[in-house]
Image (cartoon, rainbow, N blue to C red; front, side, top):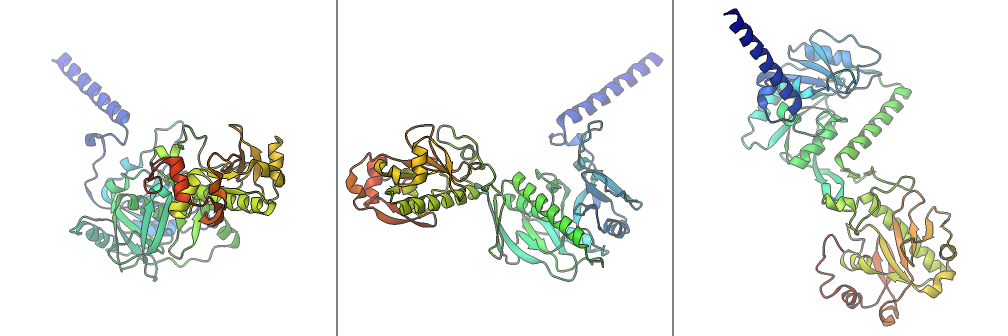
Length: 457
């Protein structure tokens, strides 16, 4: 009898260990719900995520929300420094993996159906988190997936948010009640725990921006509460603290945009924030194979920073050629873009110009390139002979290899160039063949203008 009991206990222990190993192998994204802690508990888990290690109100905020008797967690990559004695009932949730510890799985630490992300310096208001939860759950349309409540006396401003993934661009505008995609102003954000951890970057910072952008990709609705949480009375940051805070915020935002694939934010006031390549950085994509940049395989178009650099390079090159008396004209896909859009085709990655070979010596930079010397002009553009053939290339900079190609051949009736005609392109006016439609159909066939052969021009 004892032997049978021993064998049964041993079998049970082995079974439990196998189950634990299976759960660890499946990881947090596995489909087996039985391996996870239940998320059916009522209430709201409060997450304190957006705070700095210096000049913060973390203890005051934590104490205030701990008084509501619900779960409160301070979420950080590493323990706050200088060390803070967290109030009773407040847990520390660390996100940074440690080599000698199991991987962190924050989604396994939260048991409640709902979470609220609280900005630093917020004070609890009894009953308001529950009202936010009811507003979320009582939405009959099911469109609302997030609820926002202001912190402090200033009402939140409703913003429209469109994330144009193909163009690497996030656009904000004035929103209308019932169709907000984001808010302006400090806010507490409440959502279902399962929704939060469906996101690829659930706890990225800055928290509101990260959540709004990821929600916009999924078409999630945002409900705004009129009732506000009190804000703590805090002394202003010291000059050094303000400088440090601004730098950290900018770096976090830039890192977030890189993770989400956003190169350009257009704010509601029209201001632009750029996160892509520049004169001193490499372009956003590597070597192009089979005339197809890697981003096209992900159904994206040329990043806006790259298009901006191409436009700037085009204007610089055409001005230099005109000043030197070099006859040039738009060629190939660039001419197609000019006729269709007055601009570079959104998925093109270079600009093509034709030039007369006998004019090469008129431009000192072209003459140097023709002699085999790569030369950088005073504005930092690099002129060189292309290694792929008998043509020339002008790069945005020595570091950033976005370029304009110059083709010194006339492989068509010269009547198309007598005369050349001005045409709007890339934010300026450049020279182009006359009878552009006939020229393009000679090169690409009938209907070339009206029928783009994506991803070709």
